[in-house]
Length: 394
Image 1 (cartoon, rainbow, N blue to C red):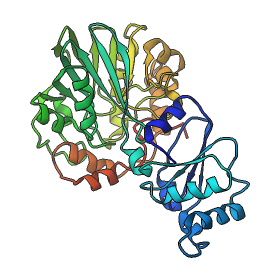
Image 2: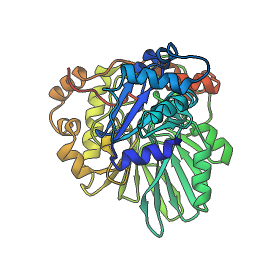
Image 3: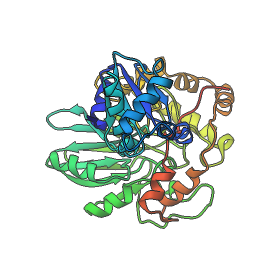
């Protein structure tokens, strides 16, 4: 019996009690694991330890003996147990062994690889003349967006698995007329340039972000500059670019029809962006402060679509990572601090910076065409959740 990534995410969204038994090596579990809301708990029990109990080829029976001897008090009954491995093979034997002991157990189809590559699509705005679709990658905490007006679509911050974008736009009977990266991403390999090439649409980026901030080498990919005040019409709608430096020197936010804001990596539902991924936290923090204040001064009814989330708990009951300027001002600690003076804000920022992930330097090289990577290398670089937001203050 198997459970796919879509069904697992649906359980998370419904807050259904779920127990994850991750049988990968301890090092792999420590580096990255599946996360869910509070109703989801996880235990790491490496499969290699279970193999010591194998007699002949009866793996499920050996696993059942190991569980009875070592995990009987750790695996709860009365909730679904999802066995997880890297690709879904060994976890199937684990789930079978658990079922023989009376547990309600299934295996995650495709394992952590399938979960890592899963994209969840939800319509967060669905009006007669306008749709906004959230494309989330739960394993990474990455959000991208598709805005559709009439038969024209704009894709914002696309991730590297392009087939989902083609499917979603085709299902809406639309065509992609522009692809925009709100900034030169460091946490994931962008699909922006490749998607634009595939559909024959312009790829747009702020020119300040077309230079690697650490290498100081200009991008080797073609792009059309998108700068402050430039308007991108599509269908009956218009996107307007706002230059909001801080997370990167060329970071953009995009206002849609004066009602919605694609905030990129500047504002999130529960946090704000870190300004140190270019290696210049102290220099960029005042820019970040000014940019946050600018966005927070937009009309309070403005609906905000962020570029990331840090926890599934940030989603609403429909699985959408959406907020408003009013709610950010009232309930987002980083946003509230940004409304104050620069000096205390800067102290807060510098005390809250998470560890700098060294792979982010290489990812940004990939996104600017300064390096190449096969799919396996891209997946390795993207391992784990993004850390584009601030951590709790030290």
